[in-house]
Length: 411
Image (cartoon, rainbow, N blue to C red):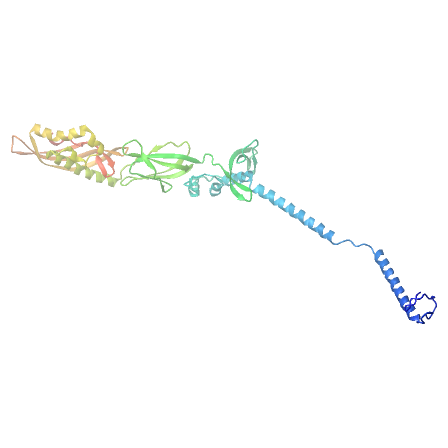
């Protein structure tokens, strides 16, 4: 060891330094304590080295995270396949067929795609099928997309079903077209309506008549090419049963339940006058006849008869000639009519065609006249019968022909 004071080397058993006399006992105790501390530190190090290695906690956390991710992936895959099936063409076709077999027409309408035909409302469809209530009872039904279809925007699905109590399978097809986005990247599918819509259904009716289907008036019309008639057209209608009503002021309304489908041809509806209207026409006939005779006695021009005769009659030369014959024959026969009286006019409907009413008419005519060569007044009273035709125009009923001749008055 060495002296801590002067650095002289001393023996291990010396108590004092031989050079400077410094006591070495205290130094020796400190050295012993340091050695012991070093020894204890070496022993602790050896214990640390010999301790078993602990596994890090991070590996367990990673394992749990991976497991959670796998569960989430499985859930997402399940949701995907579930939504893919829900919004598939097969599911739409199947649910549509079930609604139709149960006569749930409101639901059936929701599956259809009618394009821009906004007038084809749900209520119209339900009304058109209000009498279709025969359901299909089935024990099994499946839908499968037909193979070999290249167009991904339109498909055809086959519906195979078996009715309850039957061992025979039935088969139908449903055509569908891809519609708008329904959810995320899934589109909805719409059923293409086959044999559901009738285009340009028409009906020929009197030109002043109103046509209603299920209470809704059809306003679109044009001339039918026949005098006094018009063609009413509905651009689009659902196939089915409808309540038809054709009405006109003064006429008996026509009401019926009709079936409208692709085989329905344009029909023609004629209306007949009400009893009150016939009575009014009988009264009008008497007045019209008086006006004609009064005008003939006064030799008024036929052009002034527009209020009495129809537009067509005014154009007919033989009507004008028959009117002029009334006063020409009076001159030829030398007769001057002083007065006349028309009574007991009775009209019996004979025919009604294209807005024209033909009546069998009976009446009593009393004529007072004087011949040129005599001052004595003569009276002729007689019953007259014949036919008269009225046509309905915008401003009322008009005569289609001259209802009387000179000889009906005198002879």
